[in-house]
Amino acid sequence: MDNVARKKLIQEYYSKRSKNYDRQKSRTWKSSQGFANEVFDTLLTALTGFENRLVLEVGVGSGRNALPLLEKVKPELIGLDLSKEMLKQAKTKMSSFKDCLDLIQADGEHLPFVNHVIDALICMSTMHYFAFQGRILHGFRDTLKEHGTLVYGDLTVHETDNQEFFERLERTLSRAHARYHKPSQMKRLIDKQGFHISEMKTITYRKSYSALMEDKGRYFSVTPETLHRYIERATANARDQYELTSTEMTLFYTVITAKKEN
Image 1 (spheres, helix red, strand yellow):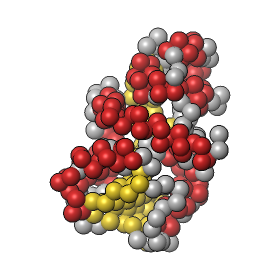
Image 2 (cartoon, one colour; image 1 turned 180 degrees about the vertical axis):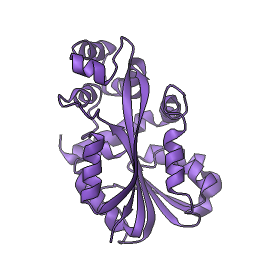
Image 3 (cartoon, helix red, strand yellow; image 1 turned 180 degrees about the horizontal axis):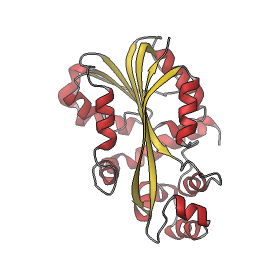
Image 4 (cartoon, one colour; image 1 turned 60 degrees about the vertical axis):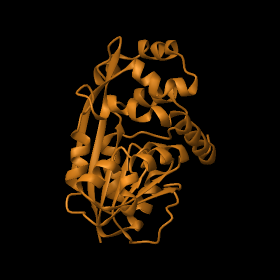
């Protein structure tokens, strides 16, 4: 699939998903079965002291991260997203912060800013949609001020998954994503683009197959039987890596905090 077609597909996907997005994500971002507050607490720590400073979130979505940041950190926040419907959700949710919030429908691959204007840039659960992730990180670096902060977070592949079990699982469920990486691969990509990594952690959590279907598969007309056939064919290595059972699996979310180097 070419880049333009993928972006159109992403817009269609989130247009359909926008009304249920927060409820679906709460299974992971707020429950003990998921990673509860651990990811957001890492983000909050990274941005402590950014009150009244300019923070950009690429892939702001419904404002799941942006709203608590506005409440707790109080930055000047710009939220950018490809989906008009997700931005509508964010606008409603954050209406009381309109004096310190701008929401922009735009493509993170072509940031609509001059260089060296942003104090901190957040990209959570979004990088896997970009086909050219090194180029994206280079653009992020250009947008940040000297010593600006980058916070990356996303699903990652098990470090020893060399048979691409997770990639093939995602292709079974969804046509929208471009590529997931191992934590070590993301570290190298971020290092290569001129960032110094100050913290990196990978958080494990459990995800049911029914939740995977609700979040992804059903939007792409995938049947539960198709998913279960794929799981049943998993190798012994994949079963160990992702702790597969008949109903759920372990997934991995990596968060990296980095500073732009001179």
